[in-house]
Amino acid sequence: MRKYLFFVFVLLLFSGCATENVSPLTVTIYNDASDAIGTAVLTEEGGDVTIELSVEGLSPGYHGIHIHEYGACDPPDFETAGSHYNPEDKKHGLLHPEGAHMGDLPNILVDDDGSAEAELVVRGASLTDGKYSLLEGDGTSIVIHEDPDDGLSQPAGDAGRRIACGKITLSNQENDEAEEEPTDPSETEDEEEEED
Image (cartoon, rainbow, N blue to C red; front, top):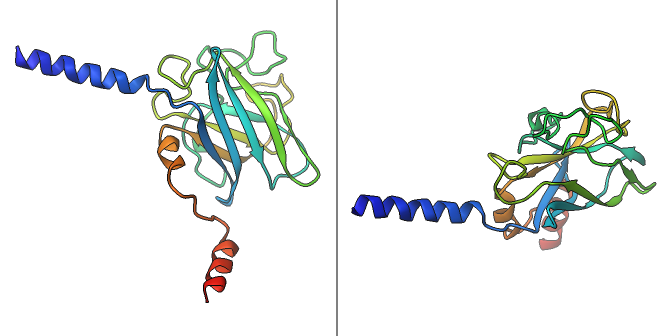
């Protein structure tokens, strides 16, 4: 009987952890040189996940942006992020009649100063457990591409190479509380000179 009660206790403990609300979740976006270039703040609301994106250091113009299937962002090519997040096995593209991937998002417009701010929505996604959770398994990632997504071409919209990536994982929740260290070597050198 004690073994049974212990098993039930452990099961309840883990099921409570799986549905813990982590919204909002801040994701740091890195370029191919591993420099932090901005953030994406994900918030679950009304059966969707809203992304507040703020980035800098990109070339002006339109860029494709997608949620990718794995929570990995190994530079410089970010191929470890895998393909677009597509739990429904649909065709790629917001304009495709048999689409779109759940991870397909509208292009972002980068200003002449290299910065962009955008609000994007991942329809039907969640930050809790379940089939459409962006945190299921090892998580997912958000990837910015060099070129705009044409909204139709298979399998990825002809958006060019991957130039920035951020991991959408539960470890982001823990890292939010830690102090962010500069990733630009000149920032560290400036701080050392000020201390002298």
